[in-house]
Image (cartoon, rainbow, N blue to C red; front, top):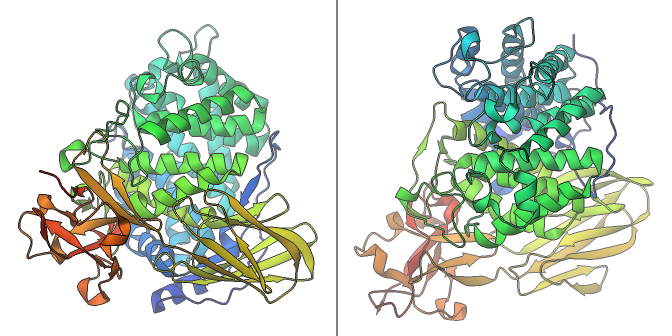
Length: 615
């Protein structure tokens, strides 16, 4: 029996489709509120709205629905559990998929309350727990191969999935199974006689194994057991031992991620996500310094305009960002981990620069990797080429649903005694702030339009700041509240502090600024076009009369000369979405109108288009 929880307050569901209405209507069943035993030393500045206290509409609702209906509910249940039932598994890392599924499913169930997902998630969790051996081992390796290759990595995802499932449902055996894994890690690895060195137990200079840091911190927070925290400190010390990846020594010294360990993006950022959680419970400033140094290096030198990083799964040298099909651009796992890293930094600091990167990644690379109809996932998603989304079992097919499931936690939350809006989406959410409970209802067609209408509804008059993120890409951000007009500075929060009462309205009007982005070192003869938060792409299926697609591009480097206008929904189909824009373009120097769509919706396309005047 699961412990009773507090029922979710009913929302007025304004779903876009009958499927959404049916799915979210199930969200009234009780949810447990599982407490965290070990309090953090560093209190988060930004706290996301709980999954079960909000509902999103519009683009995000559609993509979340596909994530639920077409991906999570159709997971290959037998395939993700087979390696545990009959060891060894058919892949060295096959065991990661059950934990990734539980992590994503827990978020989606908290958000939707979908009974089908709960039933599936219960089966997977209970089967996984039943496969645990008496000593706590829950990998897919035979005894003679234990603690090699990806074995610790698999236990990392076991822990993440089991803890997420416990936090969502209150099912105590899941936490008990996680504790048995934690105890096994503490017995197996360390510096005492007879213990193994964790650096030698995983791939990529030990980073695969040491990324177990994140769930070990979570296990410590959930249980309060000091030995789990001691194990986390052992991992951090091991990084900088001879033969280790040097994560703190290298990154805190400003050497950058390309020059740290072997530059493997997914694994290194996974360790940084764990370090951000360890900073939360220890307050050690060196940890935050290390993370922020790595973030600055990635953001300024190794980040694609679509909000992802890595080519061939590794960080590349400074400003080397190959974007074609053969470059293996933006591994889905790296995209999601970059998103998680920014989410942790936003929580820890409340700084809008991290929310800006979240917006860039979500609206572009994250959604671009998901087929919007069948929920299939791209392992890599080039900026020039075609999308190759697949079902099946691989790391990115399991990772991307985790990233998409995080979207509700990224949109809005509480900060500095008030409310912060980071992603402008249609929907509603409820928050608890000092002295009151507040509902916010957002009405908008963003990102098609920059007009947003917020209704602020506290249960009693209360004074607090409403923090509105002003995107760094906009040239104009204007707000009107009760006849008072305010202007926001790009890249900051506009704070609207007043005594709010039920029914207060906030009118936001932001310019969906058009930008032309130079191709840099990798594409010096090319430019990309962006509108608002969205990167646009030349979609070949909507420009069939153009044969020489590599010679097509905007007519000018001046945004105003493009005359970007709505091309009409008739231009698109179910996979290219409902946004299409016509611009003044050229092919081989001759004037030619071009049709662009958001990169997230493109199918066969080029983001990097011919720069005007290219010879």
